[in-house]
Image (tube, rainbow, N blue to C red; front, side):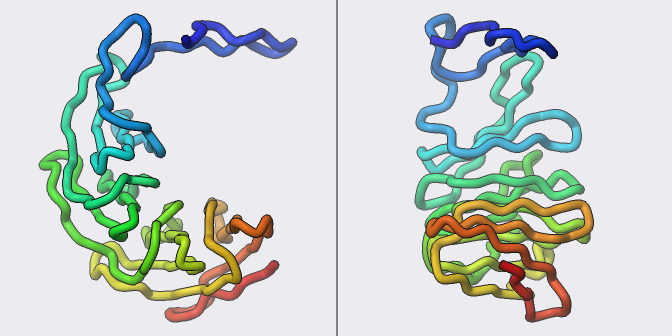
Length: 190
């Protein structure tokens, strides 16, 4: 059961504005566990689910605007490019989507196992981390990897700082830092 109000701190109180999905008060709109969400430039929300789909939602009305289908495994991560295209990751790789038409625009090649996390560099390249122990930087226009960094453990988390520094978490408990220095090389700073 979702409470509408969290315990207030001395600074503020956080309230649930609305809930989309399975609740005691409403219908189940996502068919499976939601593993990742991202916000489109126009404020709509995209979710990735274990049922192999992505949903595009209007957070104000709660309406499902579109369901994107095409992955052969559950969707583990989603991110949004600055132009509004959506990137999703699964065991079957990375896909770039048009959230308006619902179609797959491109498949990004390279990973050989679950893609667990996705981020976007300031220049628009996609950074992805996988159970295959690699961090890949891919060009979403060409669908090719432009840099690969191999770690000693699966990559479980990625965040990109405003200046392009990539923070990487792995399943062995390490945090690494990398910066794309030239095409084909990403240098770690552990």
